[in-house]
Image: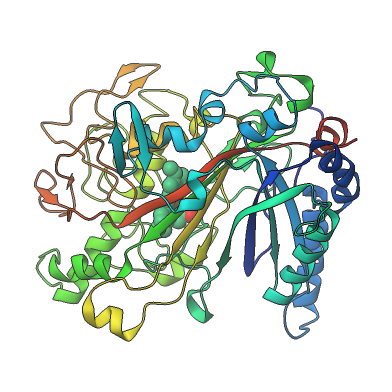
Length: 487
Ligand code: HEM
């Protein structure tokens, strides 16, 4: 029998579909008056954009384009999410059965490898001050332009009386993300096309692209088919999803300088091409988005832009473990989603429970001439990283700790077919984009030179991506918002 359809009117819109956005503001808040908050929520809930609403918005955007109307469709969409501290504040004591969520990200930061200081047993991450405080929830508004988002956020703040004597919430901080300008609008700050590979969710994504694996909805939505913790979770958690937020600063001039100083030397490649190749091998894709597994030595922008082809690949020869000729194990996309390194023959392991849906946005200005000249960051910029999954323990937390930060991974990775054997003496190394060294040591990666996959290169002491804040949240269903969060 076919699975019952998902109730898209009950699922927040950022989870399935994603809020359409050119700009997005995350407003982090504390609940200061519980009774008033619950009363205000009744007025707020109709503003929450659902996944059904996103499907409609997409149609409106398509129609706008079909009719060749100028500009963008004016739009501002709102979602809301709560931390464990927020649930406690509201008197919601049910266990959502995710220890990362219950711990909170500030206390999890040491395990994630974030820089910080240790005093006795207490670790304090080197984060921006507001993220060291308690945060109860986040309301986020995405839209076509700053004016649309401001207007909507003002409406929402008015509902909760923010800044008045009858306020039910107070602002902890807010951060604004903006897509980059012009040609690079879909690219992250290092210059690489982003948002290419997300899993397709059964019963929602009707026509997955070639190579885009489908997963059961329960890997993203609590208590749906595939959620291994469903039985332990309260009924109201159904159709909610955990939201991981990470405030990630990117050292772009330093990253560029590293590539320029360490070009891969191969016959026929200019120095500049050698630097571009190093960047591509660190990410696993060229700046255009073209996967190096398909086009290892030369960018192919047509392939990068073609959704029918740009995700349709597996790594190496699935029968020869240890092959990093085309794509290093340490490449960001191989570390964070190892595809057939773990699944498929001969291992037949299942990595669906490690899948996340990514919904980030860039923040900060373009690199200035001065920064480029100095090879040094003077202005904060990076990624407001956001992802969803039905478990942070199995999703973000695991990917960061056990894959990106683990120099040996995938060697000895435990699969249903047993551990993956050593790769002929090669240590894959860190994820060069997000891998953080836990407790010192040098950061190395192997496999950057296609002709010499066993040689290591050493990454600079200063990481290219620096976490400066974050929290774990739960985005409840609309019915849960009505019954548990409103009165
Ligand atoms: C994919 C950049 C942080 C997980 C990608 C891609 C780029 C990228 C360029 C390839 C485009 C695509 O496949 O959609 C970055 C940058 C980051 C960052 C610059 C930090 C500033 C993270 C973090 C995680 C993560 C913190 C999770 C721990 C992933 C995953 C994919 C991906 C799962 C898709 C891999 C695939 O399905 O092939 N990232 N990323 N990224 N990233 Fe990141």
